[in-house]
Length: 444
Image (tube, rainbow, N blue to C red; front, top):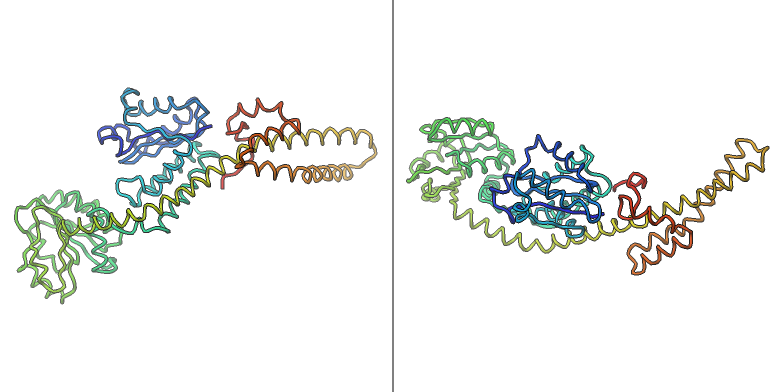
């Protein structure tokens, strides 16, 4: 059995390749069913975001890898050889570590961004629904979620804004406090304004007004943000109603002037206003900063904040990597513990067979025993067997991480006459040979 991850990301493939592999949400379930039906694939799921597409699978030893590559090639509608140039292939410990880094946002384009954990959880949910996650992936993903939570709570990796739009909103919160009773005005309806507005919405902003030289575009974005469109020539009259102004237009000159804002701040009784100018050339007259209770930040100010925060995040990466290493070691220890399960089961089956034979022989001699007496004898022999095998099972479990563990387990099998089961043990689906269904184990 091997755990494998095969995929591509913003680090290995340009957007024109990534978009070929992007899986529409409505089709993910169908693709998952195809994935887990591939020869050699025991379990599997797909993580699909704008920056990465990865197949995470449990495959038979030495089988299934090429099937996964072909599967991705069919999705991308590219020859497998051409797609392989952009793919990374990780196995076992490397694959485990990679998933933990992805879930913890250490492998993201923006380190510390929160969205990726939700996307990993969604991939796991779909895998469970489509029977792609069983014993191994259940444990692996739950451990990934635990590690990601530790990284976010025990480090400051997600505390600082590292995108311009997010930095703008963080600054607004520092200046304005709680945004739930605040109103914002977007001047321009481009991508930067839209991203900033979405961050404002996530912080509970009360209302967003949208204005744009093309009114239809203002209506479109306002509808998307559940806001209110505003004709471009009317926005100056609305300034006194808003607390935050975000501007990003293609204007070649200032569109908000000092003499416009001075009467506005008086009408607001000097309640603070925050202007975020992310346009180049600038939209907002920098002399607004001369007015009390007016705060103006331009694109350079925001990028300086972002640069400082990126440096702070880098300092937290070492601690996050240490947490990930601990999680990886814990998972590998659990995975290794599965190696003794077949021997434990074989021992139980061997002793149970002996017990049943002896009980049958005894009952044939004790023909006058009642049903109640037979039940008591049956329970007594079960109890004796359980007490006898308690110490041997404890010994087996202790061998997982021992240097001579494999030798000791083989010796144990010979002592108890279990060696004839070796062929069966290594030919089945789990790391040490028994079909997963027969293990009776639960993920924890």
